[in-house]
Length: 128
Image (cartoon, rainbow, N blue to C red; front, side, top):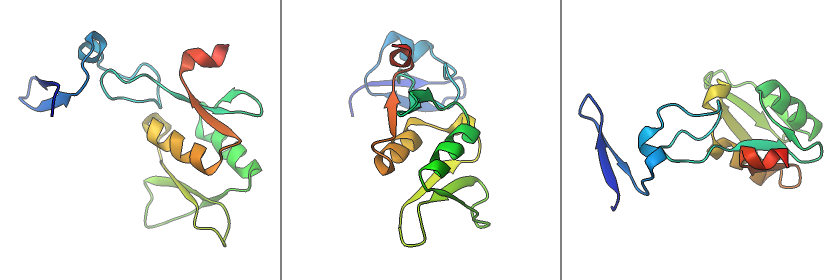
């Protein structure tokens, strides 16, 4: 494993694989619901037909519902917000209950299951 090991004030070490100056300085994610890895570029989920940046679960649920997804109530996993496509499909989207924990990993899962409707972008690219 190559990179730089950083020790915090409690003595806990973490490896930064491709260090940049920003990766050492960044403490909090610049946008809620984006990547938090040091040096990672923030990402946003965009609903392509409207070129709409999804900024809340309310907006996301509305778009998923329009595409035929249904909210799945799972009492065994109360910490997750889940959607399924249909009773005949194995497709399931699982998201953290708090939108602040909505990361690129979750965005890409939505994109893979809805290729023509969603895209993950750099926030600067959405204004163009």
